[in-house]
Every structure is written in structure tokens, then in C-alpha cells.
Amino acid sequence: MITYVDIDDFTGKYITKRAESLLKPDLDKYHTELGKRLNGKSVLVIGGAGTIGSHYIKAILRYHIGRLVVVDINENGLTELVRDLRSSTGYNIPQEFIERLGKRQPWSCPTGIRRFFVSPRESGELCMIASVLGESGDIIFPNLDEKRDMITFDAIAHDLLHYLGLQADVCATEQEAREKALLLNESSVSYPVYFFETDTSGEKPYEEFFTEGEVIDTDKFTSLGVIKNSVKRDSHEIDEIFTRLRTLFDSGNVTKAAVVEILREYLPNFEHIEKGKGLDSKM
Ligand SMILES: NC(=O)c1ccc[n+]([C@@H]2O[C@H](COP(=O)([O-])OP(=O)(O)OC[C@H]3O[C@@H](n4cnc5c(N)ncnc54)[C@H](O)[C@@H]3O)[C@@H](O)[C@H]2O)c1
Image 1 (cartoon, rainbow, N blue to C red):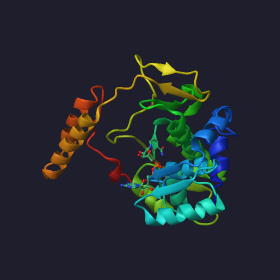
Image 2: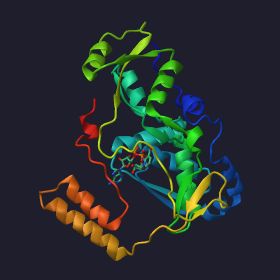
Image 3: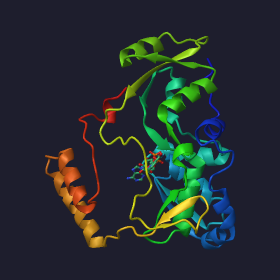
Image 4: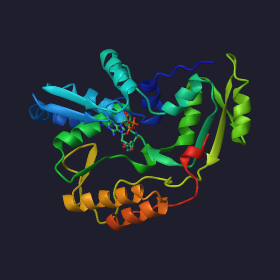
């Protein structure tokens, strides 16, 4: 059973279906401007050992910055980052699937949840362009097509197995998937997967980057759109949100409903769908 995945190859072929970066036209268009703005600058990346942070770093290191400072609480992640930057190997998207595959653990996958995907490299380039060329208050999103680019997790699971010459052994329960995983061996041709209809809180069935009433600039970039009329809060209001949340957390009597209530005052159209189950309870 092959478990090695060339993640960049798989992502390009099956997930983003792009051979080159979505951001290439904008990186080309603003090449000189990016170089000018970044030349000799000190760059601070918080959370730089993570997926997006590390790819942000790779994107920014193509320019002549003066100094790079990376802050992250994950010490092993920082060591891995240094190793990764030296060898410049790629990183993940369906990371969880691949890690489980390596350990011969069964997969657990929600059905019907549709998401837009960009590759890790594109996520870093997008954030780099937004942080260097965006104006204060801009919300920048990738111009993706709902029909072409939004795909389900279950489609990715099937494609990844197909890519490895395997097929899904669809299990009716988590227990069945665990038992079948114990029987996996070198000559296995199917892999146990428990597909479930999502029932966890906060899981939206699909994504949208903007809604009616938002002012969108589609001219500045080719592959990105910019929302121009985001509500700007002054720093006192933001301090107040944190004070209220801190008081709630310190009270020792914190409930999800109370957190949602505070957030809703500041984000009037914030909708949280409570289903009484969290992702932590999943296999
Ligand atoms: N990956 C996605 O698909 C995606 C999509 C939309 C939004 N986001 C958001 O973007 C952010 C980064 O995502 P990611 O996929 O790179 O996550 P990640 O978990 O790979 O990386 C987050 C990094 O932040 C570090 N970190 C956490 N707390 C910290 C602290 N107090 N100080 C310094 N470092 C700290 C972690 O150690 C980790 O290395 C997250 O907020 C995530 O919710 C991610």
C-alpha cells in the first residue's frame, strides 16, 4: 500500500486544478511595486511556523527584505520551519488524511461540506500581497468560481485514495472503521473511511466571501477582490470587547451562548448555529 503523497502534485491536479499559482498574474503585475515596498524592510510574522505563516514567509523571502522575525509558540514547528526553508519542500492541505494514512488510522470525513481551496503556497502569496499592497480596512479575498472551485471534503477523500491506487472502504460506524484499520497491510487495496453527515456546531455548508451591500473593488487585482466598506471599530471599542470576554472567562462560569452573545453585539449579522456537538468529539 503506497502512502507517500506528492502533495503539490495532488493539490494541483485534484483540488485547485491549477498548474500555476492563482496569484501569478498579480505577483507579475505588482512585481516592481512589491520589491520597492519590501526592500530592506523588517518583517514580523506571528504564528509563522503554521501552514499559512510558513508559506507567507516563503512568499516574502523572494524579495530583498532586511530582516525577518518569526514568533510562534510551537518550538518544534519553528525547527521544522528552518529545516523546511533550507530544503524548501512543500507542505500540506489534507494534512490530517495524510498523517492518518502514514499511521494506518481510519479516516473520518464529513459529507456535503463545500469549501473553496487555495494551495498552501497560494495562501502565503495571498496574505503577502494583502499585507503589503492592501490599504487599512481592506478585506481581500481570492476570486474563485462557486461552481468550478468549491468542492467537498468527501470528493477530496475519494480523489486522494484514487491517487494512491486505493479505494474507500465505506464504513457505517467509527467502530467499524477502527476495526478494519487494524487489518490493513501492504497489499490492501481499500482504506476504511467513516463518512458522516456533519452535525458539529459552527460548520457552515458552504462559503461566501461577500454579501449584498458590500462595496467590491474588482479592478485593482486580477485574482483577488477587495471589500472596501468594512466597518472600522476604534481601538476603545476593541479593548472593550476583550475586557468583556476576559471578565467572562475569568468568572469561571463561561458558556458558549454567553460568548456568542458578546460577539453578536459587535457583529450584528454574526450567526452561530449550535448543534450541541463539537469537532473534538469526532474520531
Ligand atoms: N488553513 C486554512 O484553511 C484557513 C482558512 C481560513 C482561515 N484560517 C485561519 O488562519 C490562521 C492560520 O491558519 P493555519 O492553517 O496556518 O493554522 P496553523 O495551526 O497551521 O498555524 C497557526 C500557528 O500559530 C501559532 N500560534 C498559536 N498561538 C500563538 C501565539 N499566541 N503566539 C504565537 N504563535 C501562535 C501556532 O503554534 C501555529 O504554528 C488561523 O487563525 C486560521 O483559523 C485558516
